[in-house]
Image 1: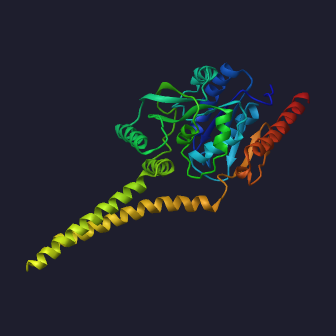
Image 2 (image 1 turned 90 degrees about the horizontal axis):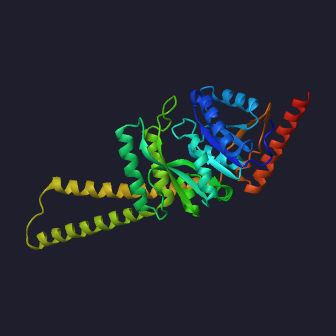
Image 3 (image 1 turned 30 degrees about the vertical axis):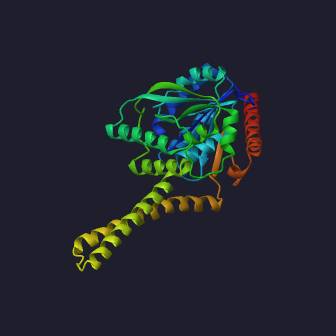
Length: 352
């Protein structure tokens, strides 16, 4: 069975230490893709620097199933860049982005395809319930999405993740967006077009543990806020103005007491005021530093990701080191050549 040159749908999943989930994910994703598009589908699995033997499982899947492509990155780049790498290699007219832990059901591909047949450019999963998640994560996630909605100039749907089906046009626009600190669900919202929600209940992980501990979640939230809002900078400005106004009032009070012949007593209150002003200054500098740091990363212009190898069929293929910098059409041409070589090898193996 040889996949067609142009699949109707691609399923992209970034993986970091998800070896325990891969077999079940492949079985369910393959069944969902077969039901939605027949043989005209592909599954692109991206290994984001895993250390649990997941790459060997991905390689075996790619060698056994002609619809599977295994992509190995040179190191751990993080979920958003691994997803970007997978999207850049997906060839389908429609592309589903989903995690391998099966919290988001691949079976929703069929209703997502139906919604896209009705004219949607993007169909995103919207969580109505989060199974097996702690109250802390539920509360902080709800607070984050509401804060982001108030601060961002781009309307980003609440209670959503990266689980969604996108048209080829939207995927190509994403590929042309060069920023390094990526917040894909916000970037997709920024693209616009008709975007439709598909409510669903998010399940517990099939196996393993979450790869997003608190520290990563905080960094992810900071990336989201600084990528889609300049409000923190305005908050810093208001902090500075408020501190300056308070300093003027204190100076006026001191001068008034001096004119009246009194002494300004209260060393403790003076030190408290100085500490307060210093704290405000550090907060403002920290906010500005977050933006400057991201600007510094962007200006360096390094590739978003580096692909170590791609396995399609029995052969491993190398991609150019500057693959991430190539324009979308050049990336697709490079990738098509690899897939054509893989299909030729499969045909030769079948004939033998």
